[in-house]
Amino acid sequence: MDTRVLIAGAGPTGLTLAIELARRDVAVRIIDKAAEYFVGSRGDGMQPRTLEVFEDLGVLDAVLAAGMAPVPMKIHLGGEVVGERMMFDPVEPTPSRPYPTGWFLGQSQTEGILRDRLAEFGVRVELATALTGFEQDADGVTATLSTGETVRAAYLVGADGGRSFVRKALGIAFEGSTDESIRMLLGDVRADGLDRNFGHWFATPDEPMNGMMFSPLPGTPHFQFGASLGDGETDVETALPAVQARLDVLSGGTVKLSDLAWSTVWRPNVRLAARFRDGRVFLAGDAAHVHPPTGGQGLNTGVQDGYNLGWKLADGAPELLDSYEIERRTVAARVLGVTTELLQKYVDGDEDAHRRGEDTQQLDITYRGGPLSPPGTGALQPGDRAPDAPLVDANGKRVRMFELFRGPHATELFFGEGETAGHRILPAGSVATGTDLVDEGGHAYAAYEASGGRRVLVRPDGYVWSLSGS
Image 1 (cartoon, helix red, strand yellow):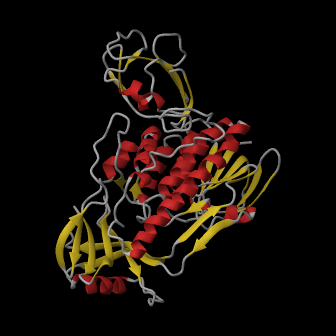
Image 2: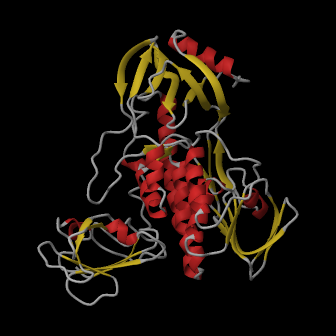
Image 3: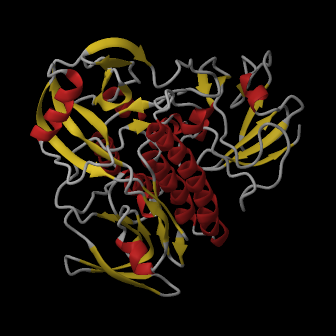
């Protein structure tokens, strides 16, 4: 079997999964029915946990260089700037949370960075190649492609979006609703005269929460825009003249739009697949769950689907493969709740609708109670995200905990004196020898509650597998 895993869909989810497999020397192919790569912003917000995943995958530097930090939003009412708002409270990095706030980069640019990383492992996306059918048996999956080729693989992953061919072919219910009463006009456009160091909200003084938002897209001349549509607005035009006319009503005609890259009328499609797995076939990303854009969770949740599934497919152990659906479907259901609640704030005209808190950062995602997480006590338990911390090696070189985790392996940490096959971490004030590491600032011992010594096993995806001692 030349291909171990066939991935249908080359968005952020499929690309993350492909990198995870390729860096483990797993034979993977990734196909996409599109004839050319998508160009546009769509999912442009990356949450702190996704930045940590991208560090492990080796793409964080490129993402940070190409993107931008959250910017203040200027509030324009009746053509006048009346104030500014921040979507996020400024948060300083801490030893355990190196990336405390999100980052902005258009989805097509993020995909380009992921494709470049995947190519470093000798794997490239096969465009204009659709999955047209598949059958599975006890030993693998036989897939037919639009090119006429037949592919035999051990596993198939449908990362092929909300209209997933794979999910439909399996007959898996996509439970939820499409709310026709809520619609938004979305797209990317040039906006001459708008300060790119800010986002912009345009509205009228009598309806300050019913307006049009523009967010600068780093690395492009465009802004992403969004406008809620009223109940009486049917057959909405999405072409440039209609978008310009809508803005003119709110801005007094002070902003000239051009070069509309894409636009669409979006309806809340809030759905969760009844199952994420059928035998040797798995669903991930939008094929398994679709979210409102509020809260910037869709791309991020999909990336973490791929990150969770990759090491499990590479290993192939039945208990690991069984754990994927339980862990990730639970997370997806929670995230759907967060994004739906935020959407309702916009609908209700809540003044805090633009605010984002810790519930969107995905740092608090936990697999506690799952099949890979034995019961625990304390603030840090099996299934929780393993915290970062600064350490010092025997030569005085600074080493972060995340550097120990980086790569396709599980990581064993041993706090205190004693024999270990993993990394031995000594308390502040100790003298390190050999491969010892010293917790000079005491942050690692505090984060891992290891004052009395402790052994910690960290999963390849950076979550605590087991804890003992202390």
